[in-house]
Amino acid sequence: MKLAILSRAPRSYSTSRLVAAAVERGHEPRVLDTLRFAIDLSSDEPDLQYRGRPLDDFDAVLPRIGASITFFGLAVVRQFEQMDVYTPTPSNGIANSRDKLRAIQILSRHDVRIPATTFVRDRADVLPAIDRVGGAPVVIKLLEGTQGIGVILAPDTKVAEAVIETLQSTRQNVLIQRFVAESRGRDVRALVVGDRVVAGMRRVAQDGEFRSNVHRGGRVEAVELDPEFEATAIRAAQIMGLRVAGVDMLESADGPVVMEVNSSPGLQGIEQATGLDVAGTIIDYAAQQVAFPELDVRQRLTVSAGYGVAEISVHEGASLLDAETTLGDLRQLDISVLTLHRGTMVIPNPRSDRIIEVDDRLLCFGKLESMRGLVPERRRRRSVIQPLPETPLPDEF
Image 1 (cartoon, rainbow, N blue to C red):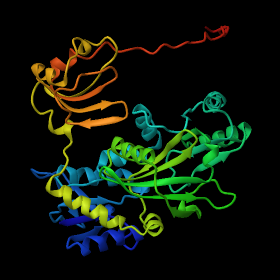
Image 2 (image 1 turned 30 degrees about the vertical axis):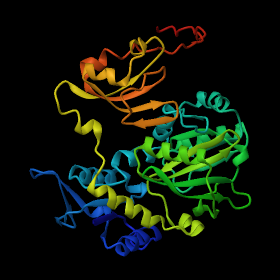
Image 3 (image 1 turned 45 degrees about the vertical axis):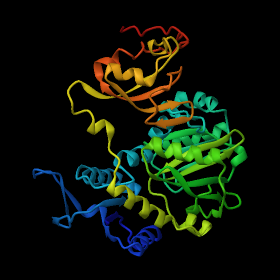
Image 4 (image 1 turned 180 degrees about the vertical axis):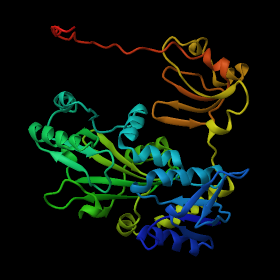
């Protein structure tokens, strides 16, 4: 396998380990500086220039893109994808995970447990927002922060209000999150490769510090993750669209709480803590996928006129529940079910004799007109809007 590793730090631990693991397995790795690419859209086929010359053919690419160059790095990864070069860290997964707000919005939509979170901009909305997440103490996070930078624990409401006002005055976007007290200064990281957790570690903060990041001086130790933590980590990584990811979770009284999904997880801490060859596992996975890569279903299967991909949610009273309809019955409507989501289970290529149940979600490919007919009228959320007090208008009005 001819492997490109996108990294601006070829001597860093993670990049060096990936190179060494690839060489040990007989592959041909090459570290490429992400910022030295030029995206070539002038020819008949998608192409890339590197240091002013046409890029060699590669079988796979492993992006190690720093947060400061996310925009350009994403463009480079997208171009590799258009050139049919396999990556276990696709551009959409990187984009999803780099935006903390977007990541939390996606995870909450798919019933992954996250800290109670709110996002506001107007000063008048700050105090109600703090109350919504359970009151002080609260954690305040910059949307663009990495490695624990821009994460602040506010012990009381006054401090929280002052910190948020100060950050917003410098045009910083911040999240307000519930502080999970029982997990103070501790979290676990699960390293997900493909559809399994290959290593886990617990990070413990220094005395007097609530951030457990290794870059903040936290120590690490190997940990055997409970099945619930493993399942949560795998699900979070897949929802983000990542096949290689570090999933950080808090150990709350209610179970795992996902804090962050990292698309370029560092390997030093987890390899040294566990003694496992995580880099080798990533290389092996990429090599296996090169011969049989995953496809972007929505991009590849919507080229036929009148056909496409859609997700159908089955609510109470839906026509699909009549007469115990099975997945196989949908074939008569020219619809194929690719994946069945039932509760916390994700069932790929489900059997045709499965009976459709309430709250099922069906990822389907088929005739769009037929699928539209199965989508129930959108349920509207009930809201209670308090009337605003009447304010007298100025004389000029």
